[in-house]
Length: 584
Image (cartoon, rainbow, N blue to C red; front, top):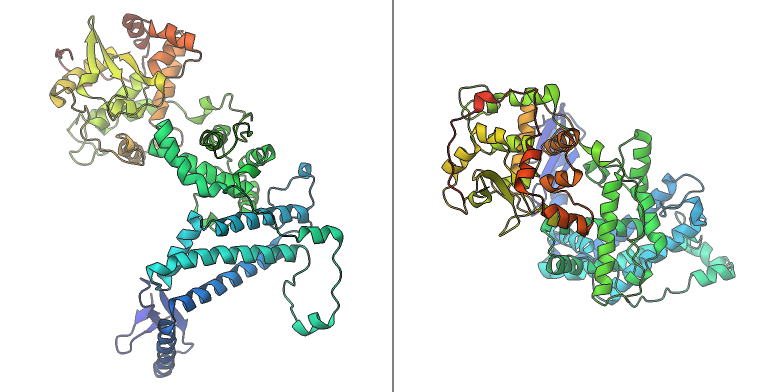
């Protein structure tokens, strides 16, 4: 560890070598750290004093600069960085491959140079429109805010900096375009030689390439993401989590295909999106290591490492969001009604995927779970530690409810006293989205007979004691969390941590695995598939089939749910005396 020497400010010692360290004023924890390259403390003092004077002088000059001068300096640095990054990209690519058009495939019928020019001109068109309409995209505004804070610029300089960054990007892409055409030097530039050498006339094809791109009449996709999200909430009733997921899907479209004026997207762009998504790893952009990598680098690393790729269902969800984005554009008059929706008409291999996404609880793993402290006796505070307490709260009941019913977690977590009802002697749970409750789809609204094993374990007694008023939650210990403020949010994390504590944690074996187990049990018992959908809340095909299922009697459903049995576990030690619950 570096040792700070109190007798002399800004000097530290590490491995017997002295260093100069000094915090940057107004920059949080950022600091300058330079080796003084000496093991002599006296020499280190002398060198540190020289650095101190130089630091103070440089800081005074920086503070004396006017904000416009600072903005200009920042923009010059940014332009230099972009052009240097272009050189690094060119040096790092393999011969005969594109620098920017990572999406290029043989079937596109383009040379690497042509593909790169297409990519660059799309970017030039996008930034030209953003400048013409004074609409910096959210990423540019975020970068401007970060740079302004780093350089202590006043708040009113952020707008100027954001527009400047657009100009820098436009200038950089135009220069890179000329480099791609071979008309701009990459490394060596000599003005005298350039003056003395007669310019070579450009071929006709190159002259046409250099012409100014037409100014698009319509905004780019990125400029409409915010309006799309507002439309989705207002017109579609989307929940915040669904809106955020759709926003990420549109950002993926822009990253892969380009931020084009909305009338420039074609069906081929949809095919490119699907092709690229199928090459991306399932943890795309989730690792900090990928933050500064290009898509091409991420795809190549996934191939080399044999990484798991995005599933077809995930890709299909991205396309659904893209299709809704273009539906929004036509519905709001931003595009003509006849415009082709590039998110529709694509097929995805989702057959058989659902059954392999998660495992189900059964056998030894199921025995281990319900033989663990929560259901056999635990410590008062440490639930994974053995003890004498059986605490009947959400951690006790939710896995049991999942075991015998297979409902979605949130459907159980948001139950209220009024949702536990009795009809003709049959107790049932009313699954509803009334009030602030959330359901996945329309078919999720249903009545589910309560399994007799749960009644024996004391669920009705628990309801009687815990929820006195009709609106009382059955599990008041659950607190809302996550983007959608779901009551099951923190329970999912607790259940995962608990399984780790009892060494019963593996990928796929989670709360949702109870749902797969119940569905399998019902199928094995030859329960009608439509009845299974009705009990578990799955979508049930055609409208006529849904109308038929609504007519299934409660006693019939009660008989079906009782066929869910787990002979590998014995829960009789949890049984309580029967207590009648007053009907809701």
